[in-house]
Image (spheres, rainbow over the protein chains, first blue to last red):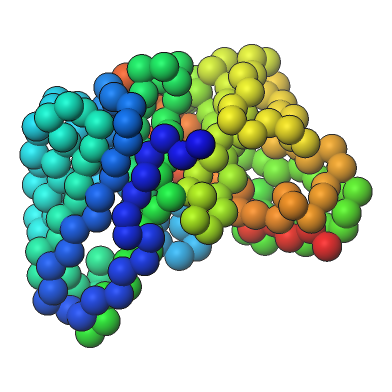
Length: 112
Length: 114
């Protein structure tokens, strides 16, 4: 059973377009993280959100944690080819002993 | 610069072979993790360790075992490799298991079992 449903799984867009990736669950999370993974490398942490309704910005990336702490989104403004990669959300649910639960990932391709 | 290294980037083994995947971290982290990554399934936790000689099963431990004899080193062992264990294996370490701690990942080992 996948606790974190991530969508879409694949996204191919042109440079300059905006996009949003969603991460949803029926479980409540104490915190939620977004990682980015480039080919041949391991995931690297982008951001951690801990408060319901929290919004964090990292240059052109905006991360939001849902009010009920069950969902999160990642919005990229004016995507660039350098944004290409696999984006993973990961949360810590209260009934999972503090382990990180990962979504399926979103494969983003930004074409010049 | 923090670093998690894995012994091999690519590995090809035959069904039934015993396979060792090694992971070393230089951050003096207490906690280390082994995940497998498959398309459409994200990362799934195999085993983790919160101290030397301590280990805990993750979500998919069947067919795997682990060893942590030293703080910096965490090994994943496939006792008798099978084709359904063909996957990308990622090792990670962190300062804390819970909380909001970041996990630092190695580059991964792509294992193919023929």
